[in-house]
Image (tube, rainbow, N blue to C red; front, side, top):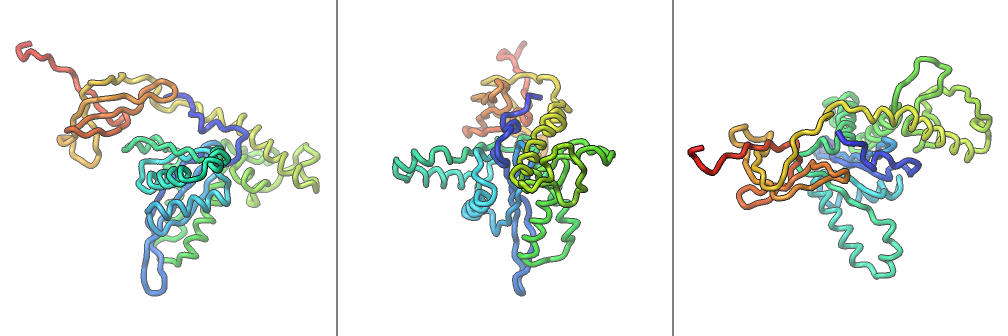
Length: 316
């Protein structure tokens, strides 16, 4: 397992500077006498673990761009967005790139620093976005408990989304002490709200400015405490290697591989040839390009099985 990526180490950057996103659903709502479907989209900060939820009426590009505009208006413009190869995400990136290309050169120069960098994980590789995939599971569990099988209105669904967002942002990022005199655990709401969570009891701190009437000092102290606790308590827990402790066999171009496809039986898994390897920033090869029946596909190495080479001479 490699070191932590740069997106998880954006220390002292605003929340959602590096953001992972994914869609989930659908959910059934009622409008009058008819039933319609709604989806959710999750934006998760890679560094601070802050979560933002929006409701989508469909999974097309336009609805994604509208949700992205609402997210930027409330949370600020992110530096990079990381997602899977969803058609709505791909289409949104293309729409923004084309809109930027149509601007006047003077506007392009002024808005160059505000461009959003899109990074797409390879297909059939959900473990590349494990941090927000796990959050999607937690959100679905919370919604299953809250809504059950009942069909609610769109307004109620949106309210539940906001409540679930608050719950997710109140989760402690690390070990929670049972001693009441210890400092409160750090949560994403500290940065988003500028104060401790309302659900947590407030304890006495040695800093004389903490409960002062100077609100800007209060919020600054809490932000400083967040980063001190983040670096001391939470960040070291991310360094542990639970699996992939040893390097597997390397893959090279021209290797014959079998592509694992969970939707097909094992006897029908396609076989192709590696045409190109795509090294990561640390030099390790995690993604490769495979040619199968004249078509090229990008797949993670974890989905490839290298087949042994057979001699050309059948008598050997």
